[in-house]
Amino acid sequence: MMSRGTPTAITIGNFDGVHVGHAALVRACRSAVGERGRVVAMAFDPHPGSTLAPGKEPARLTSFERRSAILKELGANAVIRLAPTPAFLGMTPEEFIDSVVMPHKPTLIVEGDDFHFGRARAGTPAVLAGLGRSRGFETRFVGGIEVGLSDQLVVRASSTVVRWLIAQGRMKDAGIVLGRPYVIDGTVTRGDRRGRVIGFPTANVATDQLLPADGVYAGTISCPDGVVYPAAINVGERPTFKGVGRRLEVFGMNTDGSAASIGFEYDWATEVSIEGWVRDDLKFDSVDGLVAQIRRDVRVCVGRAVGAAGG
Image (tube, rainbow, N blue to C red; front, side):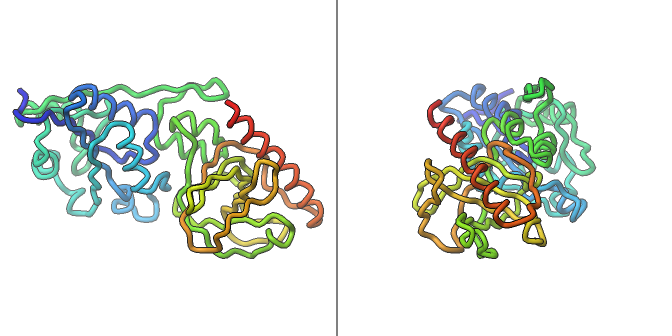
């Protein structure tokens, strides 16, 4: 039974990272309702674990703003934020559908084949299908999307897999599961300013997103004026200088390896795309040894940037 009016497909989830499995759900929604139909993605933010087990919730992969933008690029007309309050998470599956979903007049709900919702995850695909029959919407379930990693391992796309790959520093593989490079949204803050002393001024980026394993990575950094520079990215505690606390430090550069004239000091928003591992974070016996290695790192990162630009 289909309701009258504009066909509306809804998909519900966390959508953190918006990986290729999430993309399949949105595309299935769009395919079902056509270009004239409406696709609504309902996304929990923050993760429900922040309420159910504070301090033990999974690390964030995307800001809600980036998540919303990606979902819309994939075909969603609207992205609705679901705040996981105790009262919200305490709703039964029937209460959730009637009070949260039905006001949007769905003709179709599309979910993964492992979808659960409502208090104590009591809502299963079978429960959702039954609610659809009684409330007048169809249900469709999309199987998991499998992808092949660089080591030939085949995995089912999930935010959990993405987090594991990032935590291991496997940024190329994380990008395969995401369908694009991993991007960190953050704010440039004042650091120790040692980089400018040794000839490699870095942007110290504060973020609440998951950082990759300690090491040096190739990628890019964006500036407030819209310019995007190749970057050598360091994640770690700066062992040569006996640093304390992990940091994300980014050296933006020109394609000849020289420092980019970014022209901005602190407190500006940036996007750091982390695309490939270069080396481990190492402790050097001297600053001169560190500088020599950074020069080598820069050549590697420039080479990757030029190679990517050339296709």
